[in-house]
Amino acid sequence: MVETTISVIKADIGSLAGHVIVPDFLFELARKELKAAVEKKIIQDFHVTNAGDDLEFIMTHNKGENNEEVHRLAWETFMKGTELAREKKIYAAGQDMLADTFSGNVKGMGPGSAEMTFEERRSEPIAVFMADKTEPGAFNLPLYKVYADPFNTAGLVIDPNLHDGFRFVIQDIMKDVPCFIEMKCPEESYDVLALLGSTGKYTIKKVYRNDGMITASVSTDKLHAVAGKYVGKDDPVAIVRAHSGLPAMGEVLEAFTTPHLVSGWMRGSHAGPLLPVSLKDSRCTRFDGPPRVVALGFQVSNGKLVGPVDLFDDVAFDISRQRGMEVADYLRRHGPFQPHRLSDDQMEYTTLPKVLTRCKSRFIEEEIVPKGKSKDHSDSAE
Ligand code: F6R
Ligand code: MG
Ligand code: MG
Image (cartoon, rainbow, N blue to C red; front, side):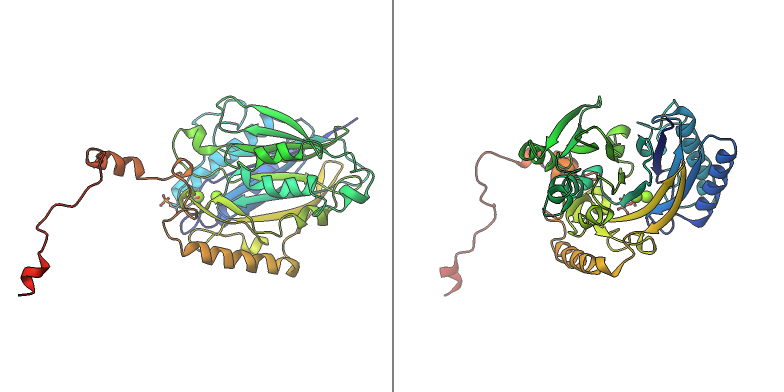
């Protein structure tokens, strides 16, 4: 039995005119490198694309997840791209490349990755979701809806293959050592929601159908935690299989119609709506955003990728984008106030500790009445 692995590995290695869009020469370089890797049989097929300022490699092979050769290929390609981006003085060149040398796997080195291995069905439709200016927890709400909300996914109620529910593998991403829990829906849906609602702490890593069939995989690399300091956001990716006993592609996409609020807008320190956009709109501009997600659909066919289809390039999502832009406009009116600005512990940029150090000695334990000459108004009335 031959299994196919899909590896989506991404990094921000520099972008044009600020943190906006990957330059063409990086696509060209990446395509050349990955094409050579197909010839050397390191991978079977690939598609290179972008989510805003993130360069994305969608690759197929039969070497399994966390494969050193495949991860090395991505790493070295990002390194070569970084060199070129530096030469051309592209903005934030090499932003996500946190290590100097490769050590077996891109995990913990800066780039993000989502991978999934399966025996191909008779026909294998998949979607790859790629988001910019946000974090892995951004996928909690839509993926919960896909696999556990019958108001989103009709198949949960009317398709006998989905009726036994789904198993969520949830990761506590604040732990230094990866830490996971498996929970089952619908039986434990309230508990699942109790965790997934904390989007900055618990994120979906994988989803399996009740019988163990893998159906979704999310990147959960937390760049700023890895680096120990803020060096860019951990813009996430997710791979989802659809149809024939799994949620239909339309049910998967339906979950993205609410432009729900996510963290990561401007300086990784603001909340904003996640806009589902086509590739041509995969560029963050207004206030470096709003956060957005693109979705490419493929058929995986004997290890090859047939496609892509730009899934959000459809008027059916205009209403969601419009709603999202209204929410964005409203939130922007809050300027530096919460909840548009994130809470102290969630901001990736903050001057607050410095401000507090400066002010420390001025905090006293009684109410302050400002000193100064208080004017006697009865005198001045004479
Ligand atoms: C980076 C990002 C941006 C930057 C902001 C400040 O991916 O999303 O919002 O955080 O533009 O960038 P610097 O610090 O590079 O001037
Ligand atoms: Mg950037
Ligand atoms: Mg980005």
